[in-house]
Amino acid sequence: MKNRLTQAVIAASVASVLIATPVFAEPSVEDLKKNKAAAESEVGSLQEELTELVSKISQLESDLIEKGEEITKAEDDLKEAQKQEEEQYEDMKLRIKFMYEEGDTSFVETLVSAKNFSDLVNKAEYVQNVHTYDRQMLTAYVETKQKVADLKDTLEDEMASMESMQQQFESDKDSLDVTLESKQAEIANLDGEIQAAVEKAAEERRKEEEERQQQARQQETAQAPSGNAGSGSTGGGSTPSAPQPSYQGQGDTSVAQAIVSAAYSQLGVPYKWGGTTPGVGLDCSGLVQYAHRVAGISIPRNSEAQYAAGKKVSNPQPGDIAWKPGHVGVYIGNGKMIEAQQTGTNIMVSNVRAVGYARYW
Image 1 (cartoon, helix red, strand yellow):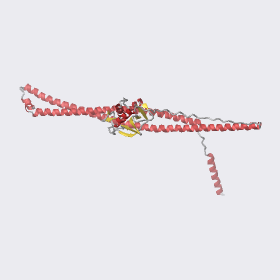
Image 2 (tube, rainbow, N blue to C red; image 1 turned 180 degrees about the vertical axis):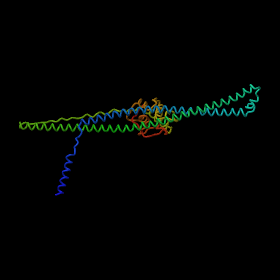
Image 3 (cartoon, rainbow, N blue to C red; image 1 turned 120 degrees about the horizontal axis):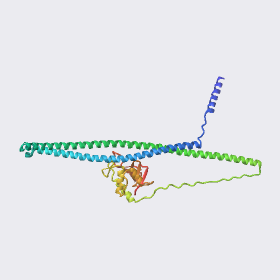
Image 4 (tube, rainbow, N blue to C red; image 1 turned 45 degrees about the vertical axis):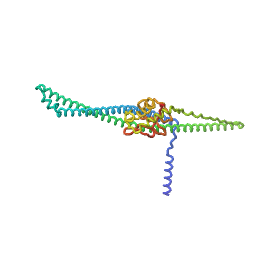
């Protein structure tokens, strides 16, 4: 008896749980549209943030180019200061040797040959002035060299800090791209859910209408048995959307080949921020500018301006510019490009990393 009572209690408990379990209704079309609007608002904010970040990347690239040019000038000034210091030191040694070791013109002979006390004072003063001049000049050159060396170190520290900032910006952009892509996929999914909900609601209305018409026909049949009902159907079609146009034409392939050949000629050349000297040092936009210059084409200096001024193409060909925010390379075909990648590397062939392509030929 007790077991039967226990089983009855358990059965009643299970039944109550099943009865109490809520059944969540599917979201309505209005709810889905509100969710989509919220997601689109987030996408708008992300796009604004991304646009601002791309602008910062572009400005930082220009700053890095300028800083690289300042470092190059400081290196040249340091070499010149070093050279002048060495020349002054050698001249000073020669004068000392001349004055102390060369017979009639030695320091001692100069003083002994004085005709009177006044002449002696003048000769001694001359010798002292020569030494004072040497010391002053040598000190000035040493100080100049040190100042230039300190400036170069400061510029290089600033460059390192800016490069670190550039890496952070690019990392932030990658994260934003991922978030934006995820949010856009969410919107696409909501579009699908909205479409499904709309179709489901339409289907329910169609069924309700059919049931209403059927009930009406049944009533009419009951009232007028000889009546006949007819129905018709309509069909519809959809016109496929036209494909979006894209630039498919090519320009002078000989010019394109000249651009590619010029880029190949710089393989192995060191990356250098602000570098525009072929065979010595180039940065990414410096390489692209040089390759086009060899082909007789003048283009802007930094990557953002180079991409903006070119003709945008959807089917890249060898000789086109491969661009992403803050970076450019020369596309050479088969998913490859020639690029000056970053500090510490040499110009190389690599897999293309681009979000857009531009053409000048």
